[in-house]
Every structure is written in C-alpha cells, then in structure tokens.
Length: 227
Image (tube, rainbow, N blue to C red; front, side, top):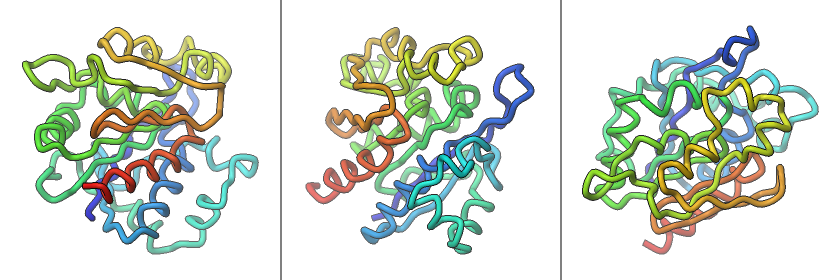
C-alpha cells in the first residue's frame, strides 16, 4: 500500500502579511493512521523541500495526539523537511493520493498543472483520491470523462462558507471553497462547524475540516481493503 501525500508550498495568507500553509493536524493524523496500518508513505509539494506549516495549527491550543507524536518523531520530521517536487512524481508509483488542507492550497493548488495531471492520472486508473478541508480546491479544475469536471455530480464536502467566515478569512481567500465546488457541479454537503464529516463517492473521498482528516484516512483504508 503506497500512498502519496501532497502538501501546499504556499505560505502567504493573501495580502494580510500573515503566514499560512498546511494545517498540521490534517497531515499528522492521516499520516499516522495510514502508517500504523502498514502504508508506505511519500510526501510531495509543488516546490519540494519543506512545506510551510500554518503557525496557528502548531499553537498549544491546537495540539492533538498526532501532532504531539509528530513533534517527537524525528524520522517523520525529516520526511517532511525533504518532500519531493510534485512535477517529479508519477501516479504509477502509488496506490492513492491524499491532500491535507490548510489555507495554503487555496492559492497554489487549483491551477497547478502538475497536481491536475496527477489527479487526472489517478482518476483514470480508478485509484482513490482524498482531499480534506481546503484541499478539495485541488479538484476544481481536474477533468474526468468526456473532459467534464471530475467532481460534477459527485458527492463532496470541504471547508464551508460558515467555517471560513468563522475564522475571519471569508474576504481573504481567492474564492470560497464551498461556492467553487458547487459551481463545478459537485453535490456539496456539510455538517456543523468543526464537526467531523466525510463524503465517499466511488473512489473520491473528501473531508470537511481538520476534525475530518482522521475519518477520511479511515475511509480510505476501508476502500483500499475492500479492493
């Protein structure tokens, strides 16, 4: 079981002067769920090297069991510091692809040609695709059969408009994820703010928010074990 985790390389929160990146828990929780299940994991990002962590996600009040475990795991830290460049990664080397969120992907994933090509290759081969929180933005320009949007008619979720407003970023992000998913013809649904919520539609798995990262990884394992 070989899994590719793709992280953002973008570290600027719009024009606010603040830093962003990937949300730590959304990486560490799936990483350990999958690793503990025996998966072989590789990490990639658009620029390669060490991807930026959203500093808010690493504050004491946002620590979780998985982030604490990561801070004590030098091997995992070394892996994160040396991600592969996304353009150098091949779909044929992996069984599935997993995108953690954080605000960073809102800027560097929707139009990233390497990411789009990679997801399209995974979809063509019928391999599972997972995206959590803001990361479903990586799906919005991906094409599937008949060159239509991959997510048209698919049941999906992702960081909601309400959640975006609650964190004060509704006017900062390039566009609202929920709106963009709907514009692409996806069947979007959600639950309460911050509560875990996952949608599985065929080989596509999406999670609404940080709390959904673990359940999304569990859903992926269930899908892989059923194959």
